[in-house]
Length: 310
Image (cartoon, rainbow, N blue to C red):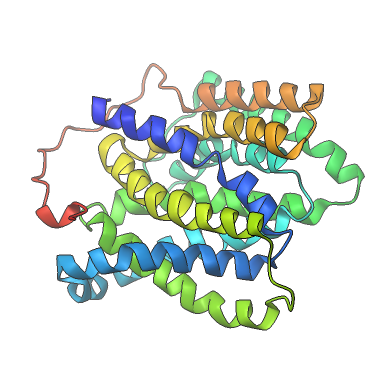
């Protein structure tokens, strides 16, 4: 991976480890739909002017609206609501650790026969062992919640993880030539329009606290606008398989933030689950003998419109 790729990887490892803390604070003052609405509205307001300034946005939408809609649904519209709703009951640490299963899910989805998301490959002993370890980590982490009757929250995080696993594959396969801003700005705008009526209907009569507004601002500016530009550039730089490996580091940031700022417990079960999921993800996504590397393709010139212009 290039120096630029490593920089984007390091940035995303931190930036997308923070939303779990911010969502946990935000849902103390606003319902999930309102949190998603504000997050998307802030991100769209920041990015849409630049996307429009680039020109040709209408042409991009006409040519790629189907995969763009699929990306918006699987990366934003469904996962952000399910994750936010789940964090009303789950700790931010638990949510962040469960999302660490994304590389494992991405491996499984990418190898579904038919080639819709990737090439079907033999998993091999190492990858199967990784899947088993990752599943064991998820079981260790979720067993207490299941015994407490909170299966709904766990299902919501699973839905979130599945969406996060599939969306980068859609970008790599169908949207690679779409400029970053012209992909994400319309998706955030669509999500803003979808969640606007629900946010208005459920907006509380009492004003949210300053902490809630700070968390919403962080979600919109850092964890949405900045993060999406960096993440889509990382997918193009390193590919979807390596891009989702940021979820190896995200849980550590999520757990550390939850412990430091919210006083969430750092139990032996959490540490064990983290070790199992991390080891499983590394094994499951590692290359194995017999894999056929993709044929090299000529480097495509980077269009000026694919850059954030000031």
